[in-house]
Amino acid sequence: MKKLLTSLLFAPLLAFASGAELHLDKAPVSTDPAALQNGAKLFVNYCLNCHGASYMRYNRLQELGLSEQAIKDNLMFTADKVGEPMRIAMQRDEAKAWFGAAPPDLTVISRSRASEFGSGADWLYTYLRSFYRDSERPTGWNNVVFENVGMPHVLYELQGEQIAKVTEKDDGHGGKIKEVSLELAKPGKMSKEEYDKASADLVSYLVWMGEPMAEKRKNIGTAVIAFLGLLFVLSYLLKKNYWKDIH
Image (cartoon, rainbow, N blue to C red; front, side):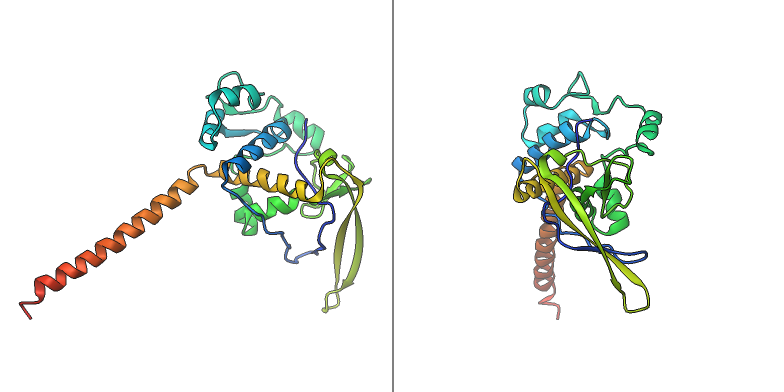
């Protein structure tokens, strides 16, 4: 398993408690082809070993500006033909034995998380930057956003290793709120800014993969609304001209 983008270098304070609202960082989602291509590269190299994207075919990456040959040469590690879906070889029962739960298919993960947390992109962006070392977990890793997660922080080489400092404070109602602040204990290959940008690119790709036609749909919708507005004006002027002699 190669690895998946995660964590933040000096993370902002993230507070959570039982029943409390989860605070998420705003994801800088981009539709820029270069960002999406980088996100696709990160996904294929670090996610696709454990997480499949079985509703996405490799040849759809051409919509990001990649040639078929570039896809074959650089991104096709789990298939022989460019028209095949992005599947993985790992069996679900094996994955469950290794991680405690089978890694989910990521084709529509951004839309799935959106139904739970309001913004799937914000959840993913915060999650990918919120791993920390935890010796009590089987993988040695935990996550502020997804407590006791089964997935290890597989991109720690890029981001580095974070540690968590936990404090508690009164919530004003007789209860306690646990606050977890993350600090960089061991630097990675990337700076904070570089890692945040890589996380944003990966999230942008996951959002695009969940609905590749989203931008086209929005553009069509805008054109239709503009046409209907123009049609309304023309119809109103026609109506005025038709009835002016009658009244």
